[in-house]
Each structure stands twice: as C-alpha cells, then as structure tokens.
Image 1 (cartoon, rainbow, N blue to C red):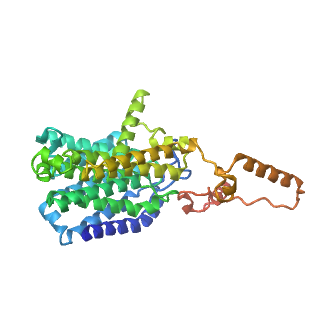
Image 2 (image 1 turned 30 degrees about the horizontal axis):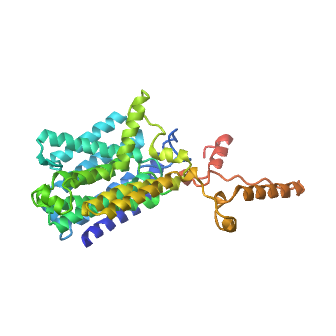
Image 3 (image 1 turned 135 degrees about the horizontal axis):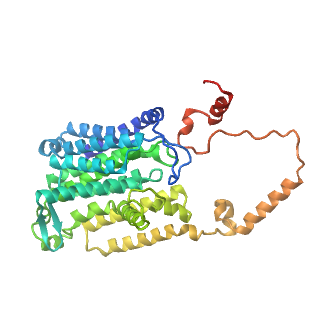
Length: 444
C-alpha cells in the first residue's frame, strides 16, 4: 500500500506542478478557442491541460518501475507498456484537436487505433464472467472487438461529461478510488497477482486527477481539453479491461458459482463494477446519441442537452451542479463496491436507498427553496430569507436613495477591464487598453 500511495503522490505532484507552465504555454500557443454556444464559461480559457496529466502518468509509471514490489508488475506483465503506448497515441490526437479542432471521425479512428495498439501488446479481454453460465472464453476477434468497443465507449463517455469546471476530473477520480479499493482487495486479500496492473492504473489515474483538479475547479484557470479527457478515459478503460478480462473468476471464487454465493461475493461483480464506475458518463452518452438522432442530427453534433446543462437549467449553481454529479457518481461506484464485499447485507441496500432519496431531494432543491425562520434571517444568505423582509429592505433603500441630493461633482465609477471571475484570458493584460491602442492605430 505504501508503494501505491507513493506512486499516487508522485503522479499528483508532477501533474500539479506542470499544469501552471502548461497553462502559460497554451496561452502563447493560442490554444484558447472562442466560446461556443454550448459552453458555460464566460471567457476564453486555455486548454492542453492533458499535457501535464500525460507527464504525470509517465512519472507515476517510472517511479512504480523502480519500486521493490511494483516492479514485479512490469516484469511479469506487459500491460503497463501497452497502456503507455495507447495513452501516448490518444494524447497526441487530443493535443492536435485542442489546437486545430480536428474532425470527430478522425478522433474516433484514432481512439480505435489506440485501443488496437493496446490489444496487440496483450491488454485485452480473454474471458467474461456471465451470471448462471460461468466463465466464457472469447476468441481473438471477439476479445479484440469487445476491448476496442469498451475503450471507445469509455473515452467518449468521459469526453461528453467534461462540460463544467472540475466535473470530469472529479468524477473520474471518484470512480478510480472505488476501482482501486476493489482491485487492491482482489490483489491483496485473494493473492491474485493478475489484479496488480489494474490496481496500479487506478492509483496513477487518481494522482492525475487530483493533481489537475486544483487548477480546474470553478472558476477554472485551464481546461484539460480532449488531450486530458480522452487520456483519463483510456486509463480508466484499461483498468476495467485488465480486471475483467485478465483475472479468472474461478480462482477468485473457489471454482464454482455456489461457493461464490456463500462467500457473499457475486461472480458478476468483476463485470459489473467497471460499468458502474462510468454509469453517469455512459448514461449521458447514450442520452446524447438518442437525443441527437431523434432530432435528425449527427451523434457527434454538440448541444446543450447534457446532464450538467440540465442541472444548470433547473436552477443549480455551477458548483452545486458539479457536487451533485460527484454525489451520484460516488453513490453508484461505492454502492457497487460495498455490494461486492457483502451482497447479503440489508444495511447496504438500505443505505443506498436512503442516499438515493437524499440525492433526489438535492436535484429538486431549486424548485423548493427553503425559507429560514425570521429569527435566523440575519444568519442565512438573502435567497433563503422571506420575501417580505427582502421587499421591505428594497423599499427602504429606494426611499433613502430618493432623499439624497444629486452631486454634480460625482465622478463616474471606474470600469474594470474583463469580467469578474474570469477563467484565464486576462493573463494577457487588460482588454480595454488593448482596444484603445488598436483604435489609436499604434503598432504596440
């Protein structure tokens, strides 16, 4: 565990320290596209945050290769090299897209090629645990097609959910934490060495997200772009493929489904958990495809119908919408994790039901804004005060303003350049000065 934590910390530190210089490089390189109709930020914000995340991934794998216990992952398995090869390819495609806005079909082809590169190096699904059937061995073509499909779906699901500041990195970090706990339990408790690569991938993925998240929280100073969203989606898919298609469930559950039930660990959890960790992004992806196809549009056409956009339309603030998405991701991922530990416990089911009810209340909170009692109005924000008190305060302010005499010598308030809470464009300087110089015809 100490070596996994060290790898996580090194990955997070490298990602965090490199994000600042990468932001300056993105501004100089012009990787700041204009604001689109579906965007929710107000100012052009630099992208290319995936550059820092990729070097954090490389640093984490390099450190793990020189540690005593984790070095065995590299000597006994070729999966870390397969992951690095596929990650480098998908990262390069993402960097080109962040700068030049390449076509969606080209990106889709690149995602399939990156998945194929990992399959050629051994990171593929060999068998599937099917409930009431057992372990089903797959042919080479079946395993290849299923692996490529899982990688492409996961990458696009994470890419689709990357619409608010800190949303994609936080949700993937939550999913990676649940996945790390599950794969570490298989590796440590059951002594199955084949689960070690997936545990390493989850630790590195958590470090990448944790290192980038402080720069990406609202208001974000830099976006990860497709170079980051596709990268973390591929790492998440690689861990799911490794734990699902490489670990034999018969060795995990004692050789029979009946014994698995007695051990309170369902045989289908290795197949179910990788799907639950991307449940929210995958649902958003499916809804987007159905919605756009129903309207006669291309499935790759951008719109403002994603789940996070709908939360904003309901009335949630930017930060609250992100936290609600975090809540549901954690509930699904850790709920499946708790069920895998003890599937017969009614307390786990009851806890999930109660937390789901709390989540529904949070979703409908803007529709039913609570009002504080009169004695507590001085201690709560104005939006929670009664309308009578607010209207009386406004009337009193209007009366006081009308009684004041106008002052001829009053100077107009200075105009502040930019917008309050900008996302990074003002790093180039005050915009009003640049506009004045252009009007004056100066060359500076």
